[in-house]
Length: 339
Image (tube, rainbow, N blue to C red; front, side, top):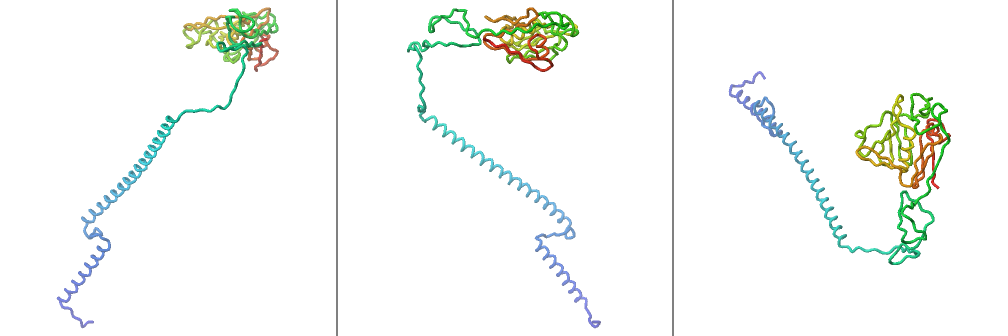
């Protein structure tokens, strides 16, 4: 090998062949990658410019994907709207058919009855009834039907129910119960108030024929201080529909009395009515009714002619009024039936 001698021209040709091989390798790399610049060594400026353009192309592709998704959503919405339109058209068609359909019916059954004494001019006939009740008064002219004419003062309904309790006493145990006895007192052993265990507390209630009587401490409000539609009368505030609030006063200055409580019961049963004007209530006994009362130490409850009377409340309170033998803080019920 030491005998091989290269001239300058031969060496130059070898270098040219090496350069040609390098160029061939570079060209093959470009053909395989599809890029004229594959690294920053090839051409830094072109490489980083191409890299930036590739990133922008990727962002644009992502945007195109989002637009394609939006188009799909719009197409789905359009399909839904088209379906709704078809449903509306179907409903219109059904409605039009219903309008054009002739209404008809067929007889399913026949019911007939003979009314005694009825004529084409007067279908009332002469039927009479042995027992009838009503919650209000009925006035007759007495001109037609029946065997007995009724006068203008005749009422339709049952006889008032009456219940007289046993004699009760005040808190001292000896003073006979009167309408002036207060529901609360400084202590439970005075002659002017109920016994301590019988005294109602703030928030206690009585239920009378589905109406509510609520006890509240303190004084009754002025007529300007009551709720709209309610009215005040003495120690009572009523809504005109049978529900009342009884204001007890305070232990040092008691206010509500047994008579106030009986008035609230009569308002709930319909024995009494309330006419309300500008927050003031005017109370009156209803026509042909009898108010509840206290006499000889005993409380007498009266029902209305239109309904039986039911009073439910604390047993100790009702026992102190002589209306029940039950005791305790639980509820007891007193019933007064019509006859």
